[in-house]
Length: 82
Image (cartoon, rainbow, N blue to C red):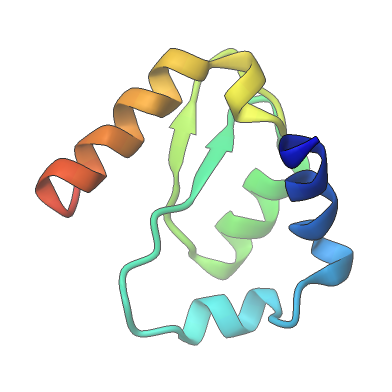
């Protein structure tokens, strides 16, 4: 239930920020995208937003590459950057 609520609550239709807001944000943002998620990869590229790209993954990274995503997040938490 928590996971389902998270997907609904974090939907782009409910965000209070825009892609351009993200581009102007001064702090480090760790953004991830699946290589098969053409829509988001294209948008990030247009806005020059860098992201960690996960192979063999689509929009829902945690389902397609759970171990790889968990390892990446763990590194960020442990060392504060990747």
